[in-house]
Image (cartoon, rainbow, N blue to C red; front, side, top):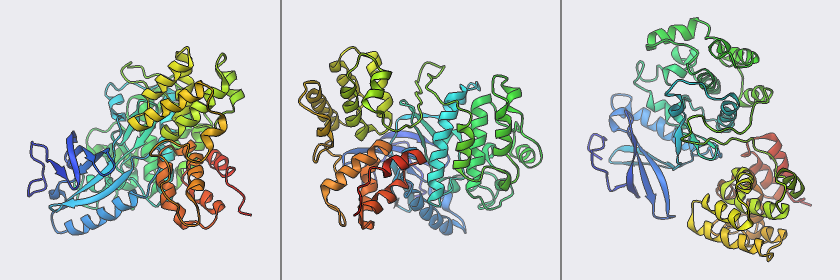
Length: 468
């Protein structure tokens, strides 16, 4: 980094303790690098912040506020949120180390201004709302929800990024520092007038993104910040069904509530918004129209029994599919269910199934161990119970030590239960929470708070052993 906090054309060899591999992006706020964490051999994204953004009389106050907000964002551990690993400063310039995810920003799908299929859009927005519901429960308001901060992965998973960073990013873009925070096209009326932004500004912005995905345009067409501000504060939004006649008429009432001028007239929390969308019953799988990237979306459901799987996929051994799913869900999370189904429909033998599923596993150690265990299942040397016994989890996934009153075998069984709903993040959550719980029931209750849907929380809590 230079003395001004800017980055020269050449890549720095390191940022903090992280080796820089390449450049992922650049903008007015700073640079985003692809880095390598040698301590645990993983790739990370490193977002650097230009020091000049923190200059002036209020610079020190802004930096301290920024530190607090990034630390708060670090508490947001959720499958639909890009995880913040670390905050640091180098030569006076702050940087944030985050989970590295490979996907496309939602704004890439909006460049041709064409509407996205309705059920696909609803499924994406539901995931955004689940992320926001979790963040709001942690006391974190994003303040800058927009398509550029929503990432779509190839498997249909949505990741929301830049929690805790948005307040800084727009500090000087509209007016003076502290006057307005957000991106104008997605800002709620109270943000334009400099009022305190609570969780309802995130829900308003999500409504704007939903509107834009379904119509190809935003609800207020103003071009400059001044014109846009006037429209948001004084005019009614465009009607979605007039812009896209294929939309169901009940969506207009939903947008009236989502985009209401006064916060008290809007959806009051993410769960209320989710319930309104779920009533539309429009969530199903679909392939993106552009043909370049496939978005596969399916609502999260409780694991199916072998008999249900055999009905959905006739001709396959239901126990084999259930065991493959159980192994894979610990590595990839809930998307494993969809992956096993889809792969089984495309291949003709258990061997091909194992090979194709292994290709979806990013880590070499976990991939090799998955293949070995699948060979055992296919050869009849592994029973259903073998995948749930002590020491049978994927290499590198086990909880490494006893914590609090719980031994390693018990914590490993808890990790497997939680991974069904949250994937690999289950291990990190258990490490953070196990030392704070005194009984198995309390541990399960604390962990259940991180599961986004009520049905999945209830299913997880049923797995808790009786304290008595």
